[in-house]
Image (cartoon, rainbow, N blue to C red; front, side, top):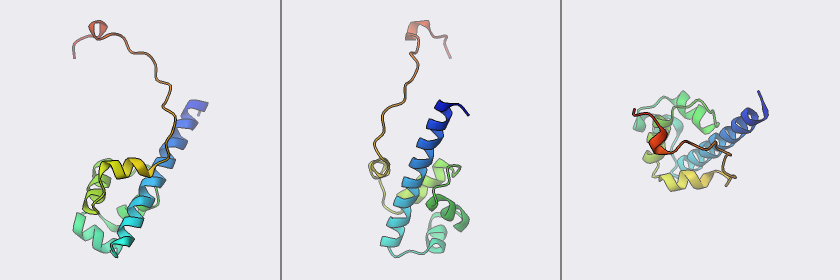
Length: 101
């Protein structure tokens, strides 16, 4: 992995851990067990374990279903992660230079 890949991996890992921690705290605050939340949302308990542990490969859609069931809004989820400097993205060509698609 090069430096940019390491940085991206580190940021993704931090975001996943922050999101998982937020989900865990909210679930515990609502006095729900993982099996209860799994049953209520239709995901597996193993998925919740991985999500709360900050596993980066958890499916985004299912993760958002769990967050929504806990009453978490997108702003709550975004605020859970540390503010980070934006990535250095390459310049994109002007719209009139892009092929139709």
